[in-house]
Amino acid sequence: MFNCIVIDDDQNILDMFCDFLDMLKIDVLATGNNGKDAVELYEKHTPDIVFTDLAMPNYDGLYAVENIKDKNQNAKIIVVTANSNDYEMDLFELLNIPVISKPFGTNVLKQTISDISENENSMPASFEIKFKDDPDYYLCLVNYDQYRNFKELDIIQECKIVNSDNKSIKSEKEMQEALDLAIQNDTGKIRDLSEMITT
Picture 1 (tube, rainbow, N blue to C red):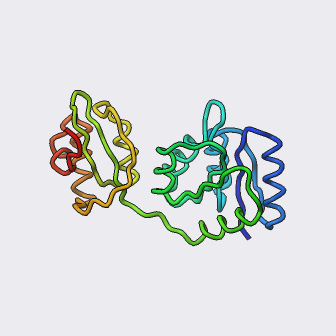
Picture 2 (tube, helix red, strand yellow):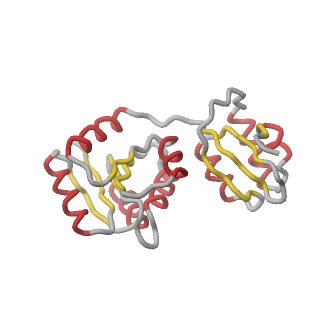
C-alpha cells in the first residue's frame, strides 16, 4: 500500500482528491496548500508519492517539484493540474513526472500511480543555455543537478530544457568541470562542450 501527501490550494479539490485516494487504498499522510508546504511535508513524512497542483499562490507546484527533487532525485511526484506550459511539460517529461489534467477519473489516477511506481529517472538531459552578452544559443547535455546549478549562474541569461536527439553526449565529468569553471565566470569549456544551435 502506498502513502502520499496531497498539495492543492482549493480545499474542495483537496477533499475530493483525498476521497479518491481513500477509494484506491492510498494512505494520505498530510495535505498542504502551496509548494512550500509540499517541501516541508515531504521532509517530514518522506511519502511514497507527492501529488501537487501547479497554480498556487506564493509557492507554486514548480517550486515544489524542483525543491523536492533537489532533496531526492528519486522522489515520485504526480502533478495534478488544469494549467501547464511547454517549459513545465518538458521538465516533467525529463524527470518522469506524470501530469494528470483536471477533471479526471479514478481509473486515470490508478493507472498513473501504477505507471510511476515502475518508472525510474532518466538522466542526463538536453537543455538550451544563452549566455549574457552573447547572441548564440548552445545545447548542452547535463544531469539534473548540473541543470539546477546552471540556472543559478549570473552569466546565464536563459536556461530551458529541450527535447533533443543530440548524439554528441559529453561525459558527465567533463560537463561538471565546465560548470565549475562557469561558476568562476569562465564559459569557454561549456561553449567547447556544447553544440551551437543558433547564430
